[in-house]
Length: 293
Image (cartoon, rainbow, N blue to C red; front, top):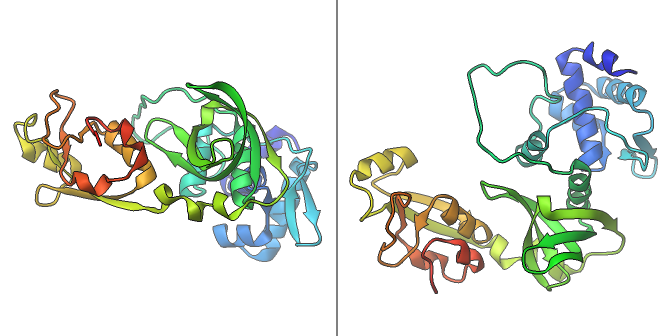
């Protein structure tokens, strides 16, 4: 089936076929029940959708009779085009309205994020490894060591508000690390089991939840009620629960003064970390403005 025929489909049809491709590409498999659950259709309709996708891209999927699931083939070539931002939104928030339509936005919108040149094929290897609980071998460009080859056990994607990371166990350093997605290249799945100490359950910083309290900066803000309204504070305090592994990113992105005596000067510091002790032992606080052990 040609791309012209795809464009002739109704939007619900494109949604379902795009969903099939997204699961194949980034999770490595699709079941009829996935379509039934997501779209509320009958099993027979799900079978027709999978058949229709096979007409579009016959070499993209195989049927594994052992586990009765359609799996991504070695010959996979995408039939739908997605932006990296759209794929990351789907992976983090769930499948929305499928293949991007050509409809204009309902109101004028403009973003200021940096252009993302993320390699979606690289991303698909990582997401399939996360889904299957497998390790990968990858090349990574670090600021300190340059280009190195590592074995890595990924278990989650994380957005720090500026760029996307993958969280996992780095066998080279023997510790849990965050790798910036755009610095990863030449990634491939590895065979073999993952050890218990390499799993997400053993990542203390990821599993620890810190309860933080942010307040208007006592020295830099003349009208604290403005900041209270902007951040939706209750009784002058914004209480948040964040993963310890993400706390430093949050403090830096929001320019939170993390000094004990709220001593950072500057109009960019509107917030102060009131309960500094809540972040004791958080390893990435080197990123937080003014935080010193």
